[in-house]
Image (cartoon, rainbow, N blue to C red; front, side, top):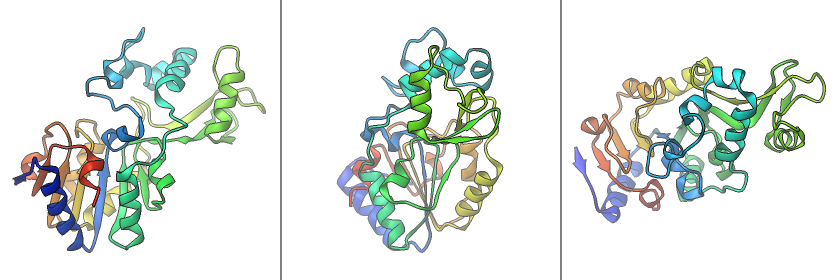
Length: 249
């Protein structure tokens, strides 16, 4: 494993690996979007470091959503929605690589939709998206602006379907909920076919998402993350840096 702490050198090494790749797959986490103003979870100042009446892990669980919808949506709209966020250099570079026929897929743990906003099309959202929302009663669909309007209009802050009155639930995977089987299968196929896997902005501690790395058998694994991960020992390139800085080539 080559551990590169100099960002300029890391860019050169990664750019060379990308130029030689026939099938690059990118696997990203919260660290990809921090430069867009969206907080991550485990770093200092991240969501898990904030103080709320309940632990954040509890407040984004399925059982909490059902038992305390008012508190769930207060936290959700306060801390998990960033309507003004825009794609940063990392998102833009991946969209560029896809357009050039190099990046075949982006697999993301993020729910912000910034990869699509940057222009990426082959995006597998393991944990869903804030941009899709479904009525728990009649299955009507709502985009982010629509559910936000319902939230703001409700006296208790709980968005309800104007047709049937049931709660409108964000299509994001909460704790205690399984990942979407179709999305998971697509991600596995993409990783299994890749010759270069770039893992960035993720601590690789959330399963089953982190377990997807076991399906990679390609030539090169690169990990870009500020903190060490358990997969570092398997990487050809390991860079303790911000994602956008390394992908800025």
